[in-house]
Length: 148
Ligand SMILES: [Zn+2]
Image (cartoon, rainbow, N blue to C red):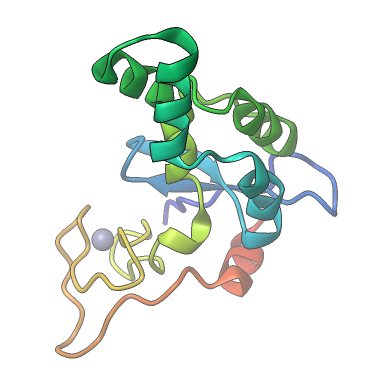
């Protein structure tokens, strides 16, 4: 059976980055656990404040400032992500889609993660959990177990 979690990219024991299928990217990307995310969180911007500051600094309009925020934002964050994972993201906004905590457990049918831990239905294959059940978070021990 094909597995959507294909292993540790970085190759060192204290820096674990796992390739997990992301609905956002439509492919496997390295997702960050909370320990890794904590290295990026301090440089992430408050969007409202960042857009306001950018407008004041550059005199640009709201639309341009929003575009700047989505594409450029905090380049340090993209750099830290690259240092952790060896993988480059194209734009700042993509950083918001690589936090493992936001994904649900792996679908028992297709092995791809549910979109969120609260999901009841797999967005990839349509598998429905029994009434009253939700996906829950990705189980890190199952990822370690699957790691080759
Ligand atoms: Zn599925």
